Image (cartoon, rainbow, N blue to C red; front, side, top):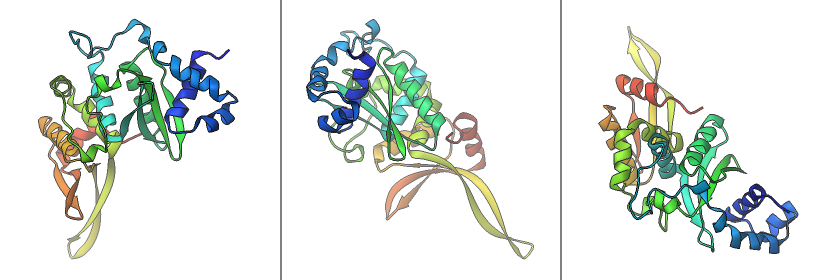
Length: 258
């Protein structure tokens, strides 16, 4: 009676933490039907014959590594993986409604990572959660684990670091699109006895995880971008890029959110 896309959309709502009762009332689909779809969800994850490149007996290279580097940055910033009682994993990336182009880019990167799975944009207050289910997300993002990212160690696997080394700007772009911004800063100085205001652009990256900030700053260093660390309350929190040449590099390869 219901097509696969409808089933996936309903299950994605349940995966967001909503009760079966509330989803049932919204959609008109019975709770028993939704529960039955939960048991049939995993067999639908055929991915159009595409096996996971990481959990095979002999792992293979990631397809679209440039897109994966971007998605990795998004995941480390604003992404998380949750697991249903049936053992199916949901990847979610929170994207601010103010940046529709970023939402499109995120959805495209998620789709390229698992081409046979549906990608949904679930509206939440002020943002859209770009969502996709697959049993293979922990294979693709081994940084997944219990607890908050800033409260546990975050390190890239060697195969991930190889991708970042080959596509550093896409990784940087993903991190900026998740937890970063490009702003216009201003300051004043005395010129000929008169105080004048001048403006200049700079980039900020804000993340409470020391490990994620280091991944970001190490990659900046690798591409020749100068950066500084700024603290809040005595604790490091921001990475700032303010030198003119470095901002120009960031503008050429990253640019503001859109």
